[in-house]
Structures are given as structure tokens and as C-alpha cells.
Length: 86
Image 1 (cartoon, helix red, strand yellow):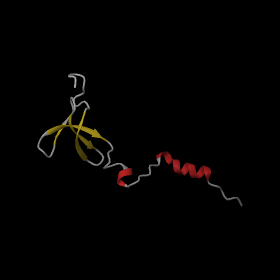
Image 2: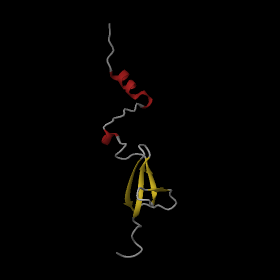
Image 3: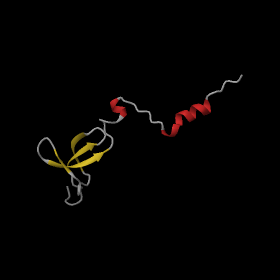
Image 4: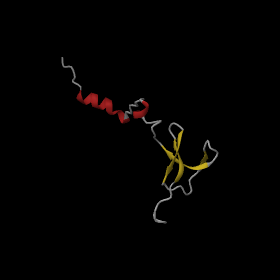
């Protein structure tokens, strides 16, 4: 490999903030100025915080959440249900 053209590839911890689950892996993401966390092996690694991972995503956990923003379901039901006429 040519020197100076490849990104720095190092070990980082990805921390899922929703489920507090962490994964130690290697990545080429920029880690300058990031906070560090001690792993089970006793070494400190930079931490990348993510909001969703396979531990918290509803597709992988099987726990579906229905998010009704601004009453959209009720609005749909009112608009498209038939009213009884006497």
C-alpha cells in the first residue's frame, strides 16, 4: 500500500444510546476529539454514539412501535369512513 493515501483504520466503540449496547469494531471514521471509554480488555477506545442499532431497532427486536404524529390515523379514519345516513 502507498503511504499517506489511506485513511487511519483503528478500533472504536459504537455505543447505541437507546439501549446502552456497545460494540467494539474497527473503523476508518475520524476519532479526533471524541470521548473515550474503557472496554473489557482494559484499554481505552474512542466512542461513536449512534441512536439506533440492531439492539434497539424494532425490525430486529420484534417490538413494533406505532407513532401517531398529529392524529394522522384518526384524521384518515374520519375522512374515509362512511357515515350512516338515516
